Length: 291
Image (cartoon, rainbow, N blue to C red; front, side, top):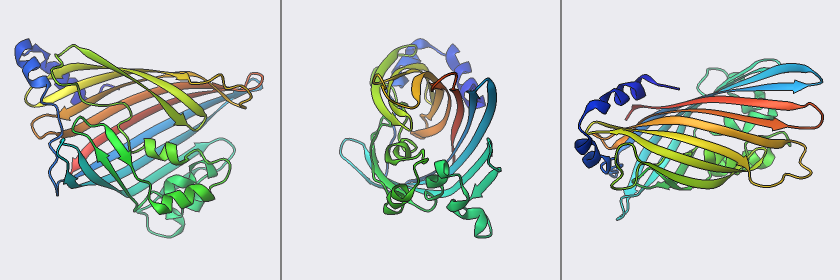
């Protein structure tokens, strides 16, 4: 999970500590009405499933191309931003089902029909072409996400195997714990946050520690270490969340006051009756790829 961008930025640690501290507080979005950004998000997830002494794997690859447009800027520096999903790609392999490939930009109706996706992933196909309006603070925290009506209808129509209800879809459009350092943070200092997430398998407490690894007038590098624990006893649940971790790095383009890149790795374990167990691993990347 060490991206070339992150490694290059970490190599700048040799500059003077005083200069780094002075620039740490400048890692902030400078939103301007009419600004546009295009981001490409990819996520590869593997579920290793153990049951009756046998292990099998299910793999999902998700790709989303997102176009941002700043509609207005508030007095506190936050902005109202429309984020439109330009393209969705999904590849699902493993298990008993045939491999499925979905691409909302593909030629031919079948290749871009969400109904071809497994029930658990079908809502993802409905995201293509939809605009998620919301408010984003200057420190990167996503304050609100408005669900498009088409996506809400797709969730309502989804079967019982659907893994992307409203809260899970919104998580795709939030900061996922990556916020910029508080004003005055020095290089090497850390800050913490905790929240409860509504995931497909129940409520989870996410306790995060973020650290400012480097900051100058070109880039700021922030790392994250997160521990995920069940938020309740989960009594009676067919599947129980045993725990998980997340690590990651964000590179913020200080010179242009905008996000450049995010890399993230997640691990989690679920258990069920008998020896049933699911080990989840996931790797995500987000890159700014244009205006």
